[in-house]
Length: 73
Image: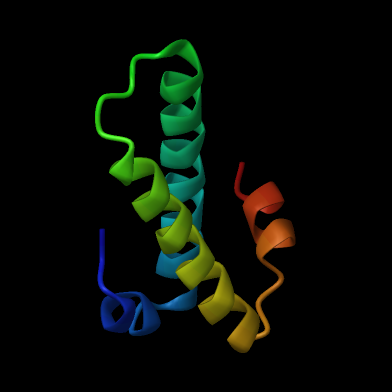
């Protein structure tokens, strides 16, 4: 997980890619948690925080993250 300064220093394109990867990771962790396969539940909390941090920075930059994520998929 990148630190806050590292996320803040990312370019817009890299930030969108980071958001995409973090959402995939969070989905996988939630799925593992629901099926009882997740041993380290702290990773779930960390992924949520990482996603929130990246979304906050994207909003500060006034990026239309949802549109960017839909275009590149």
